[in-house]
Image (cartoon, rainbow, N blue to C red):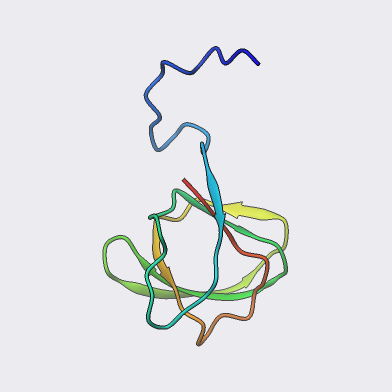
Length: 87
């Protein structure tokens, strides 16, 4: 399949080029810092952002891709499921 954009450098405002399932963990960082976080099932998500600060996002809606640069998703404080990291 042809890709007209294969020679373009991806930036933070361009679409994601890869994704991975997120398994919340209090100890492990994600394998890649995200440019967005997709929520499959609504709930709260507690994260460590790329800056090192922590935040709990309450009532995140299902089926939404949130533009967050996330380093870690904590299991404690996270009730949302079906999380996918996009980078």
